[in-house]
Image (tube, rainbow, N blue to C red; front, side):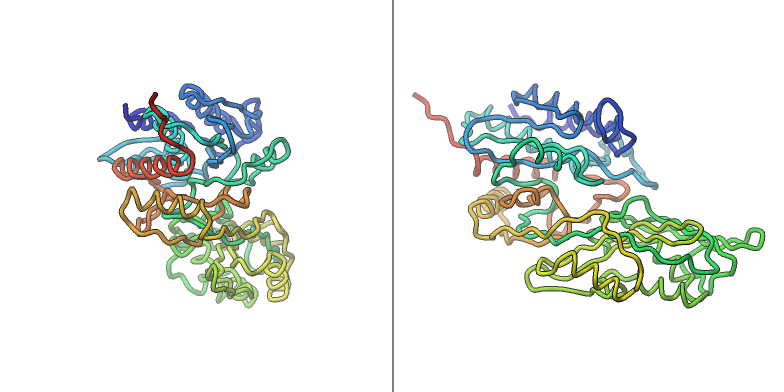
Length: 430
């Protein structure tokens, strides 16, 4: 019996839980929604025959089989919904399309791998390795779940994270989340944009005591001698800022002509290649650096800009920070970081996953480099593998995150073939 219909039912159940990080509670240090999502995943895996462990709402592991472990690494927390959805962010199927926050990042792909494994066993395949699923509760906001696991257990030596792109990701750029602090430039009174550093902000508002020099792409209202400047944009993942429209950029450009200080801020914070920060870098192996101004905040004395940098693998976080300090002369604080990650394209893992992709799709497979950060980074021998296909319009971290039922079935088939290639053999009939 095909598990796909059961997979869809379980996915809708999981999507119905808003698992954005919130205040700690008895279910999870990452909030009630994350705790509920982990419980649902644990219950689902247990019913499919997996041995399950919930580590206090930090993460859930689900094991099956024996022998050398193979990891499937994903997460159940999501970024906030944001505004402008035309379908329910808590799960809806309409016109053959599944909508919901997490349907592609990462609830749907992780569940697809779980059900694909169970399907292989139902079809008579025997596992040659122990498969360990890791469902984290804090991927979008700090990776504390992975840190907790590393304190208590040993990671498998290889595996994949279904939280990236097809055909296979052998190289992930370095990540640096930085807080830049500047003196509050006159005549700016307040500036606010974004909720997460790794999301392109779709709304920005500024309040200042002088009118903007350029009102293009923004709205301006005068209130009691002050000017409110507002802009809307389009969200996107912070690793691909070129796919969004940064509302903060629009406001900063509008304010640039008001004072030299605001002009310098606009120059520094409104580029996607790091040129305004003094770090427009690239290398042959992993391409060019990207920069996303994800959050802007002000207090009485300062403006704080939270920047998401994805840098080439031949550079270091320390180099990036020093370049920014030298260019801008501002305070720079590292709020989060991931070192670059690279796996040999000729490794058995990469070859096996490429083969699975080609077997199901009929398309050739050339390993890719991404700016995104997946849990594959916690294991030297792990890679990112799906679920996004080449050429598809991305909806991850955007309104109306979605995937067609037909495409989700194809994703399921690819994961099933991959697990079969890497971890299974046909049972012998006596």
